[in-house]
Image (cartoon, rainbow, N blue to C red; front, side, top):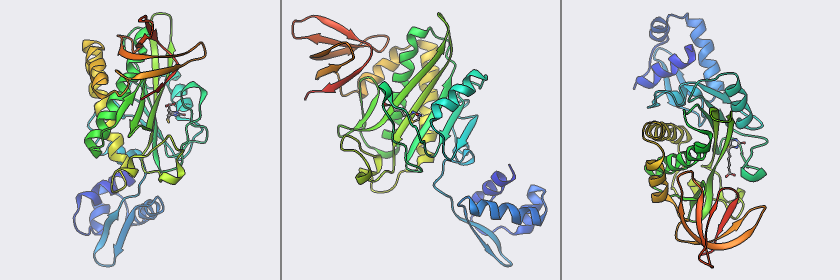
Length: 319
Ligand code: BTN
């Protein structure tokens, strides 16, 4: 806590702050201050110390430290409680466990890297350290379990809006919730549910984004944001913006239902109107993607003219 206060104090200063001033303001001894400064330096904070002048913050590390994420977080509850890990197997497991233990609505689990990142349909999610955003949010919406897929669409819409406003990159959503940039995947969402027959206990929404990955480290079908922005993208700012847009949409969803989420999804999607190949364990069909329905299913029109709703699996865009 004291370390966060020291950083907050130094950030507010444009000039050097003397050791005496800081320790006096924070009510700690000069020795304790010195020790904290050493610890902060080893966490990557560039703190310059000049005799007779004091300390100056010359740089913050590119880390998703809770103190950095929390500073400037414009939300009321998403991210108000943050669990941070340098590396975990999967943030989904930590979040699910925390959910069963009663973690509050909006609890955020962040990892800098994952050794067993999970994707949809049993796939793996490559999660190299310090390159992407790997986060799971625990939500406790008062909705029926059948409406849970809307939360996934909501996450896709919120992430897209956040990326668009921060980077100006026109990402699009491929059904159900792949985030695409120039037809390559930059992000994905995995939702896990803990529910009774008629009520949701909690939902864990896992978000994976390729942010500052170098092109050569990615598979051919994947891209990162940095490939298309000149400079590295601030993962802290992006995560803050995602939390903000997610909370905004979540409040609208709980108040007014899913219609406006579906509208936003339609505005960002790149699937509707396309010819798609549906790949599920049951069948392989080619058809035209027509719409999504109120629970997020994809409505397709087969060549015979028959309409069908797809609720699970994956699709491939044909053109
Ligand atoms: C997909 O297949 O498109 C979904 C990918 C979801 C990846 C994220 S990263 C954070 C969270 N932890 C995981 O293990 N998976 C999700």
